[in-house]
Amino acid sequence: MKSIAAKLLLLGFLLGWLQCPCAAQTGPSEYQVKAAFLYNFAKFVRWPDEAFAQTNSPLVIGILGEDPFGSNLELAIKGKSINGHPLALRAVESPAEMKQCHVLFVCQNPKRNLAQTLATIQTNSILTVSETEHFCEAGGMINLFMEGAKVRFEINDAAATRARLAISSKLLNVARNNEKGGPR
Image 1 (tube, rainbow, N blue to C red):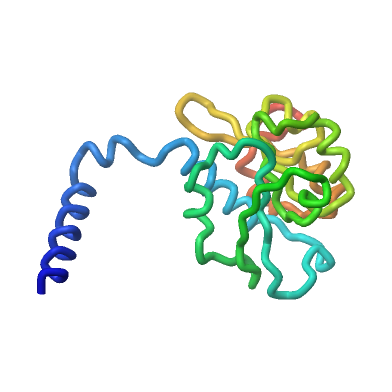
Image 2: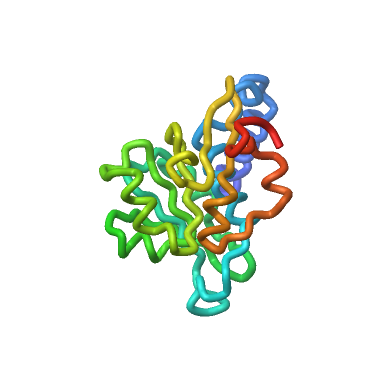
């Protein structure tokens, strides 16, 4: 009986907090939004069949460098799958580990040369994402950036095409076109 009362009290507290004006004002953090973007990017990309060992193999999201997400990315993908592929999250360091990923988030301080990293994996079907300035110009595929208080992104579709990735036109239409430097 006490545990039911405690759960109801906790539920009441949570409902009250959600209705509190202060809860609405805080909104999600920058890295909660970026984690959601990363998950949604994967939903709008088609990998070649050979990118997966089996039809139910995990879609692996790798983090190269110092992880800025904390638990936000893990929470964003927990229990989710894309096209029958459960999502898995891994910290990666070596080129061999990077090549086992389907999505590679390159942190601002990856502890290795960015151009060398991208050159190492450019022929693999790995969606590369970062928040590093000039990432797309260096051969990366999706770069996240802040515009005021909003998270935006630009896409280098040519780099994705070279890696045999097909980015949905729905995603391309809402991105800043890196090749022209403006909206699509």
